[in-house]
Image (cartoon, rainbow, N blue to C red; front, side, top):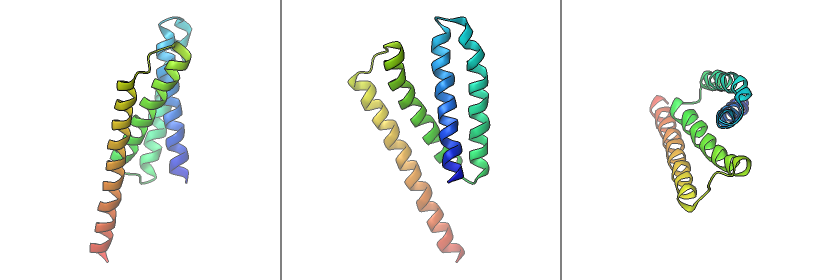
Length: 116
């Protein structure tokens, strides 16, 4: 459960940093949030990896969720476009991450069976 809380925090701080980076274009003061948010996100992602989550799974979920949340929130906050191709692209990213997650579980199950 701890690894998922850490991963959620890593995603939230990465999205915060990315949205602050966009806001920096309009207001220079947001730069003060960009650097700490990205540093915090990478630190949290490193802690997730220390819990034993495979790097492909952790990075895939972090990247996919970060991309989807950033696109959705940028639409609300900055009136960025949210078109059908963007939605399809996000869906494909999520599908790819799910395949990585399922593949990771399958490999762990096979390793456990060989070890036993």
